[in-house]
Length: 572
Image 1 (cartoon, rainbow, N blue to C red):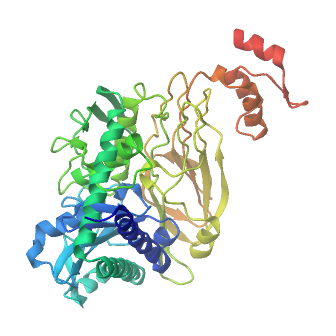
Image 2 (cartoon, rainbow, N blue to C red; image 1 turned 90 degrees about the vertical axis):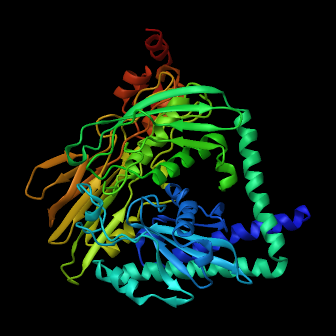
């Protein structure tokens, strides 16, 4: 039996291998969506595909590392997986979990011809074909319109690169050099992780490394059970709507029953609307990933991710519902149902866990594509990024301002300087959206970001939920503000929508992204007057809003609070 110090050294070595894989891919990729946005994740599993550890990245990929490895095991069988093999998959319905742009690479790791682990990474490729530039689309009606499908293909066979698969990928991408560059960077990152695990196996031996892996999983399970024992028990309910209006689909009902016992947490989505012929469905694996995100946040956000920790989680999503779609339903924008999944679970538990659950946040990824044919180079350009927004306030704090949505995790938006250098656009405004949910603690501020088109042509594809139904306030706090995308034409006039599908843009047109503010927490009249004054000084609110929402009278000349009038107003 291993002593605890050696076991910990091995465990930390495994986690370090996942981290090094993450940094290697980020530093060698050609795509801004990888090296700037960090829309990817890296991790290790055991020989059965159980997650050992995962580097920070897109939280929406929490389930993908496990399920991608298990999909390879199901298809090929352990006996047919050999040293030097590597597999690619983006099939949402067999284990990749999200949309077709998110490609997972799976590398088996061997010790003396015995399979002991998998290195897996998964990230967003900017272009993988489909009917729209940028590959995901907001108006697809079937998955075949969304790009090239890779149903667990062997890209390396005993160390030999499959050039035919490479050629198929290149032929189906509008930006083949960038797409293949991401594949090569992804492969190099996996090789780094493999070499680090092999070093551990050589130093400590197979048995000790496997024992450390088993200890990681068992420790995760025990930590989860300890935290579950401290949580309120019973059944908790909530409902919401998904309001993207994709392909004219009306609001879709979202329902959940959360059941907590001493040894399990179950999310039952029975009653949620059916899958639709619009790209706002998700596969059961995407649902598992979303469930893991909110489970992790509620149970113990600082505990490392592994399958032992996730073992008490149970998910029920009836076949054919929005959260358990099957082919050929489109899934381009599956982040929207995954996002609202996390929010409705949180809403169900808000009253039972008021000190742990914040109010509703802006929710949407507001996934953005601005692309076209560059006037100078005559080559396609594709700007792909999420937008950041406002999070809900908590029982003891204001909401976070300008933060990416919960399923984006450790990702970023593209810096202004990079946008303007890489693409024919100018960022003319990057500011806080002043509209938030009032409360004793106010919601976080969303953002306003303007792109001026400097090219003769471009096209906009984007989708936002929470366009009609703002983030929910809690404990007397007010609701937040909606997400919106506006196109201001250089010829005059503008239009506002939640969803735009390959919308033609001309030179001089301006696209304005307005992300919502989070919900407020607590009675606004309980917000200390000095904080309201600071909000006014920081130009988050006007003096009129200070009086209307918080009952605070501000002397704009003296820049002080009129205490007599404030107390009188609050009494009234």
